[in-house]
Length: 318
Ligand code: F6P
Image 1 (cartoon, rainbow, N blue to C red):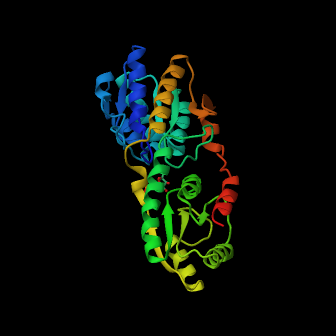
Image 2: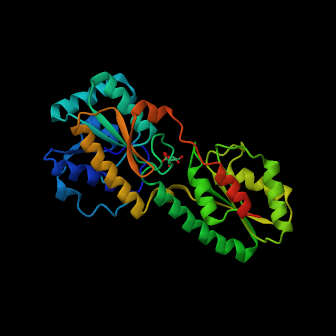
Image 3: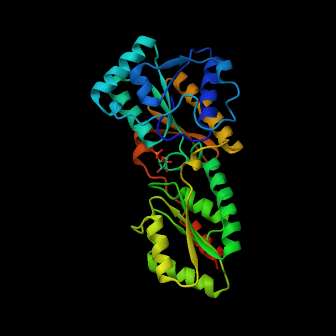
C-alpha cells in the first residue's frame, strides 16, 4: 500500500514490490487508499504484467489517504479481519512517519509482519539518506525557481518562494542552494527577521537588483510567506516584492532516475526482508548501501539537516 502524501517514485516502488514477489513466486495484492482501503478490504491482485508502464508515472496507482479510522482500535480490528479474510500475511508500507506509526501499532496488536519503505518528498525520515520522491521534488522546485528568476530579473523584483516542508527544510535548503537563492528560511534554524533584512540590504548595496528568498512552509519566523513579504516590503525600500507558493505541484510529475532506482532497490529489499523472516523494519539507504531501521526508531529519530549548507548558501549569495 501507499499511504500519506503521495510522492513521485511510489509507482516504481509498487512495481518493484510486485515484481520481486513474482520473482520469488509469492502472491501479491495491492491495497487501495492506504489504511482506508485496508479497513474496507479494497484490494487488487497484482502480478508482474499489471504494473507495466508505471515506472515513469508520478502519483500512485494504488492512490493514497490519511486514515483517521485506522487510528482507532476498532478501525484496526476491521483492518485485521480484512487481511485475514484475504489471506494476506505480510505488509509492505510505502509512505512516511504516519504510515510507519500505523504499521508499528498494527504489528504490536496483531503481529502482522510489516516492512516500511520511505516515500515522501520531505526527506524527513530517520534511517535513510534519501526518501523516494525527494530528488524529483528538488528538481521540480529548481526548475520552477529558474523560471521565477527570469521574471524577477526582468522586473528588478524580490520574490519570496514558498516550498513544501511542514517540519523539515531539506527541500528549501537544497533547492535553495541549487537555484541560487539569496536567503533560505527553514524550520530547523531561526535566523531572525533582522538578519533577513540586513542580508537583503547588503545585496542591494552590492549591486543586485533582484533576489529570491526560499521559504519552507514550516519556517521559524512566525509569519507566513505573505506576511513575510509585507514585512520586507514595508521595511526595505527599493524592491518590489512578489510571492509565489509552489504548493502541490512539488508532489507531482515524472520521477527522476534517482528516485526510480531508489524505489526499485528498496522494493526488492522489502520483499526479501519479509522472506527472511524480518519484520517491523524500515528499509532505507545509507551511504548507498541498503540499511534497515526499527520502525519505531524511524518514526522517533530525527534526520538532521546539513547546516553547513546554510553557510555555503551565505557564501554563494555574497
Ligand atoms: O508530507 C508531505 C507534504 O508534502 C508536506 O510537505 C506538506 O506540508 C503536506 O504534505 C501537505 O499535505 P496535504 O496533501 O494534506 O495538503
